[in-house]
Image (cartoon, rainbow over all chains, first blue to last red; front, side, top):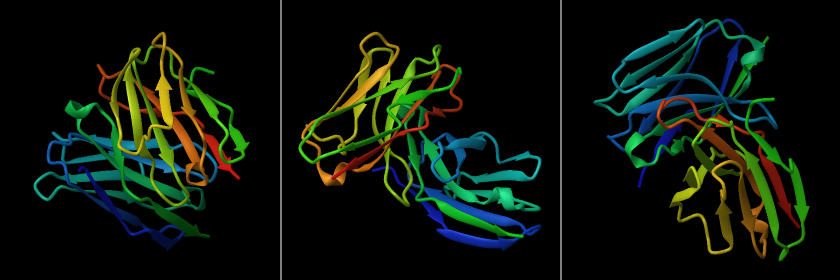
Amino acid sequence: GENVEQHPSTLSVQEGDSAVIKCTYSDSASNYFPWYKQELGKRPQLIIDIRSNVGEKKDQRIAVTLNKTAKHFSLHITETQPEDSAVYFCAARNYNQGGKLIFGQGTELSVKP
Amino acid sequence: DTGVSQNPRHKITKRGQNVTFRCDPISEHNRLYWYRQTLGQGPEFLTYFQNEAQLEKSRLLSDRFSAERPKGSFSTLEIQRTEQGDSAMYLCASYDWRGGGEQFFGPGTRLTVL
């Protein structure tokens, strides 16, 4: 079945450093890849997404890259701040399979001041 | 508030009892999804509706689970004869499939089965 693997499970960085989280997906027909940030006890919130016809997308300090051939996509956060500390989830969606999101296992990011 | 809402936010029940959760999606969204999230894991898909039609159910959704979206607006998720393994956060999400964009999540209902 469909599967999304996410690494690392935990990531600790110093404030101002960059953080990179990587995901691989199994369904080659996946065509939409969102990243969600979830703070403790709160709902997942979309921070950036990318579609399969685009290789890279950037929004201020956040960027996502997609390699369709390798079925791999990554989240890059630059100039990290303590408020970036949260759990981040990648997901993949095949629009032709009902649009459900298949999530990775999550990465707990800790940004130390 | 025009976002996705869920009620109750917390539910504590004893094993064997039935529980029902409600989700109110963003009004113009035709698709509604239910996910389950256990501690330290990503959300797992349970089922989804397009308008009032339930179009897919995950194998995670045992016979004890049933979901409805009777008028294509709000949805309910019922768990019968709850088990301790049902303890989790139940998340609802909605989106407009014609736009193909973001799924918006509700705050979730945290279920604890004693």
